[in-house]
Image 1 (cartoon, rainbow, N blue to C red):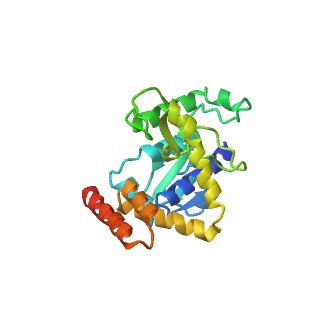
Image 2 (image 1 turned 180 degrees about the vertical axis):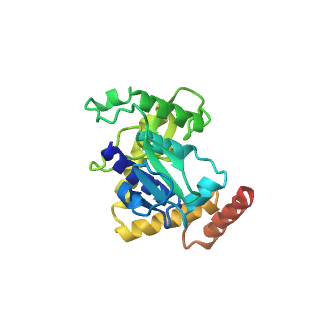
Image 3 (image 1 turned 120 degrees about the vertical axis):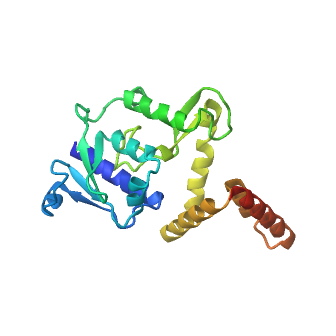
Length: 239
């Protein structure tokens, strides 16, 4: 159980960083929380203090909690918000915390993966998220964690998965591998800067227009002006 708890802590931290929500949030062990002599979360295995973070707004302002709830449940835990600024984590009764030793294919037959895959397809509106096809869908992992984390197939945030038709599921790994190969030329600091830049751009501009703009980026003023016009036009529509 404790190994699951540590994996959940890591996964939740990485998810919150990706979503720009972590800020000053911090996890406290059971002992660290008890040492504070607070009135709530006495039985919690771990407590997350969220004041000063985007998670505070997420949990207190009526936001969609589907991904947050699902990620925690994926590791065999449920949470309870005690104070407005605290979240306690508790074990799901009768949850199987043992590590599966079968093949990857056998793990995909586990009810926990079947539930996760069904939720991915539901969140996608039952259409392929790459081509829009309305046919039988498969849930695709866009990345896997490091071997040291060794997460089970269902222990990923929903945003790490895409609902794809069979054809797209077969072909998508090719550009995913190519982008990883491309990124090998960048340093860690450059990778971090690229992540921040893309996150900012894709939150501000319509994705296809921004990608088109990057493709057309050149010293040719005419081509640059055309790309800028498209970016501005679709950004107005996007707004």
